Image (cartoon, rainbow, N blue to C red; front, side):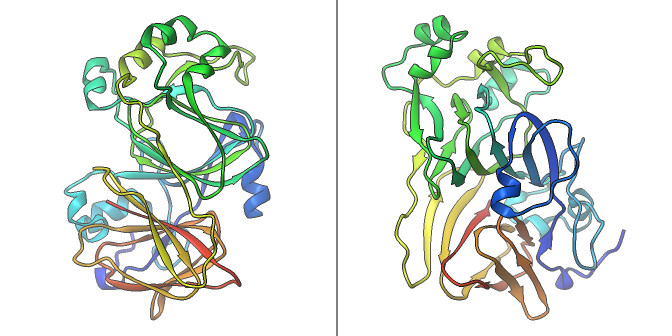
Length: 336
């Protein structure tokens, strides 16, 4: 592979990897004006940053174009991920766009204890959703209602009425949801969401609302594993309200602050914003939500359009984020 001196590493963009999903929609193309590849089933997800055994992100621009994220990690190690990433063999986070034309299944992701109990290669997953756009009436289902009991859930698990046991929220662009492992959840129809998550692909569906897959048969449910994964004691609200005000100065809003796996901020920018990856504890991921931004310094820069994510290597140091369009730019920043 092409190897650069680490001082020449630059803000890295990657080719999106589109995933067909029976519940997929058309908001990725409508909101971001993207041309999607030919597909037989709806596109439900765009994996913007991924390092899994079965699929790996590929750099799209610059001298490292064509190289995989996995190979970059193998070569640059902590220079890329930072000290908090340790000696990880796979990039620790995934970034996705979720395009829900229909409601996703009612599902849960396991924590470390549940993974040990279940086995079978289960991986823990905590995630964050940031609502980019939402159609009228779109909803988020996240967490059990305070009054719901385990017995009620088990009795109603096969019924569409199970939604009455959930915390239900009206989707509002700019709102975020911190979905810890063990949280029962479903993304409602009409949502376009930026998802930041641990590097895991373990999902247990417990109700699919009577839907059938592209083969005309009901999709597999994982009730036994799901019930072992649900944290019945956690009834806190996962919603993090976004700012509805537009100001004429730069702002940084905390979205996820106390998570052991990632930290997320919402940047509202009217002018250039200076940031720094040093002392090299973590890479920075910058996901443009509204308006284009230019990221980097000197001749090591990238233009990031809405929906795109750029990876700033941990060794990069000082950089700026400069809005390129009229009006407030919105950027979601993620670090370890």
